[in-house]
Amino acid sequence: MKKICILSFIFLVTLSFSWVGHSYFTYLIVFSTPSFDPNELVQITDYSYTENRKYTTSYSTSTVFDFLEFEEFLKCETTSAVFFDESHNLSKAHQNQLPAWQILATYVYYPDLGIDTGIADDFIGQLAVSTAKAIGFNVNRSLRHSVLKYGTIEIFGAHESFIHFVKMSQLAKAKNDRYWQLRFLAYALHYIEDLFAPYHIKLGEWYETALIPFDRNMISYLNTYHTICDNYLLFLLTDSAHSEEVRKIIQSAKPIFISKDPQRIADEVLMYTYVNFSALHSEIKTTFAEALKTGFSYDLFKEYESAGKLDRLYERILPIIETMSGVVKGIIQTFN
Ligand SMILES: [Zn+2]
Image (cartoon, rainbow, N blue to C red; front, side, top):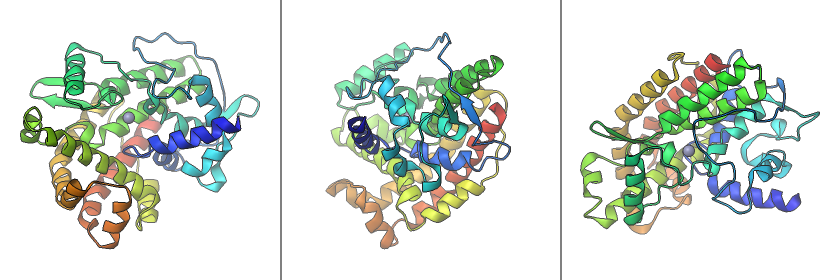
């Protein structure tokens, strides 16, 4: 058990540097969503569903993690300090019950543990994956965590993933299966949070994307921008001089109700991220132009922040964080 905990910790830290630090962000959200009781004790029930969406529950990203070990990991206390404060440690299920917050804040992370690895839903998606692989761009895990649109062509399907799991959550609700209602909802929240991440909906500007087949550096640049952006929010949540302010913004964000139709919610979020893409992308390029030559590392955020180099990027990203917080709270309330 101890071995699992230590390996879990390493594995989690490695993967936690995604756009939102999904678990920590969602943890802050569930404790500040009006009329949602995070401490409600929920009886764990067995999975009893038939889904028309294929995904795996044995993690191909790691031989250490299989489904059962992940269940153990959720109850593993040594990992709690990574995401949660001291008053809300992850705990073992007591009498086969878990608090609602723990189900949402931990399972929101689950889709990043490889459940979508190597799965494409459509022909264009599969073609895009093999092409990307051929030019050395690994998109395996992110297939269903992105939506890339080129004119009328749309590939991958984070929005479809969101819609599917909202529907599953509502199906569980109709069966009075509270545990799976929340657990499916947690998966759905993952994908909608991903849709707020600029580089999950665009690789770059159209002219940059068009250069990919001809300029090998371009894919590496775009990949680095993506990494920078994904890491920046985690930095803001945990290591920045602004962390307290950012957490307060998340906690005090008012719920935003878009619709009861998950398709509409996904469409609106996609549009929002499209509208914000160019300004954010341009700011990231300007700020990290030097880092592209010397190499990006997470420590650069601290250095750049102290030197005042992140001020404009911070101003630009704050409203996005606030909107995302409001929308996620609205979704929890709508489908609770
Ligand atoms: Zn994701």
